[in-house]
Length: 321
Image 1 (tube, rainbow, N blue to C red):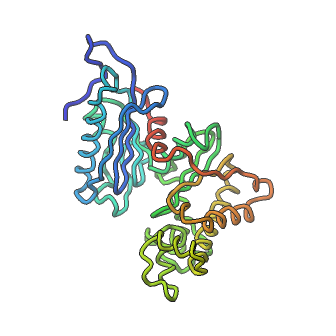
Image 2: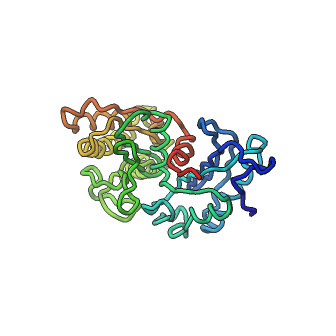
Image 3: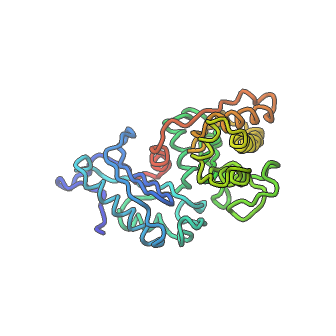
């Protein structure tokens, strides 16, 4: 792919600066071009070719990037920075993928920042996807103006991120904020997808709650969280119990995080929140019951930026060239 320079094509004069945001997930990759006021000028999305390996994933990112940079809205602009939010754990220097699950085979060890810089000619930094999500909500969403914040994304897994003094914390290994892998009493005896036992993800994620309902008499056919939600909506006691248990377990973990960090706000997101009121109500109730009395008024809000949170958060933390 031809390297894009930081000079517009009109007489060699640098044009207005634009920023490229990239969101790499196990199933979907999205890119967007933002102007200096955070308005999206162009977007592109495609399935992530995860099974084909890291090189194919990077090639997919570059193809999408070329597509948005070729849009009429990008004519005469100067690509000043690239920010990436990605599945997996990003090394503390924001340059390399430190670890990844089987959702992205071969992703660990990929020097993604250097690869994008070489191809696109703009300084690049990486964040974990939930870390980027929180950065976006801090920049323009539900956590706007907060100095301290906690984010949790409850879906196929339980992802998390924390911010202190307005900055998203990476941690010594890049793994700060992995709330889904905090041990909790409700998960004792349950194996987490990471291989450990007793982590909250083992009872609070969508697949975990589906598996738990299937163990109940008469529910062996439950295929996914939609089936759990539908059964709960129809008054099924077992389905409601599974959702309350998952939400309560996550609420207990969040209470510990709140008691430790004293954040201004807790931001909730993820598809599990749409499974009906039982999960979120139990989460909020358990958090309030276990928080220090002084902290029981900590705001707990839903995210507001949707799919743009990761993209906007990634570019908000990227260095300008």
